[in-house]
Structures are given as C-alpha cells and as structure tokens.
Image 1 (cartoon, rainbow, N blue to C red):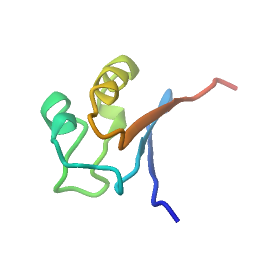
Image 2: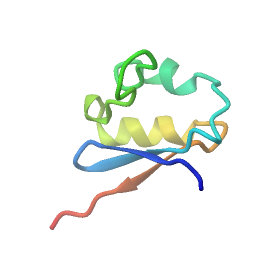
Image 3: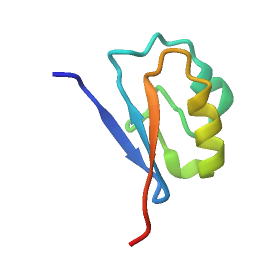
Image 4: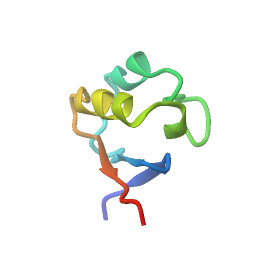
Length: 73
C-alpha cells in the first residue's frame, strides 16, 4: 500500500507521496518556510499562501507533491 501524507492549511491540502520523492530539494529551496526536513511535521502548509504552494508543487520534478483545493462549506 502506498504511503501518503497530507498537510492542510485550511484552503489547500498538500499531499506528499514519499515513495515517489527523489529528494531534489526544490520544495525546500523554493519555500523554506513551509518545508522543514528536520522537523515533524516537516510540511507546514499554513506558512504560505495557496498560490505559493501551488506554484512550488507544480515545480516538483518527481510528482511526489500534489495538492487538493478545499471547498468552503
């Protein structure tokens, strides 16, 4: 079974599939305030806007990062 981790900021959920991650480091380089590999949880989605997260996730070379826009109820 594929391991999947989700990190919610309220407006957007960052989805990480560690099995796909090639550790290119683009996430940490582009948004160091969000991606903190030495901490748990290592993704702090609330530290960036939805637009910043989407732009960074779209730059992920492995496809390990994706996102889901949360609908308002």
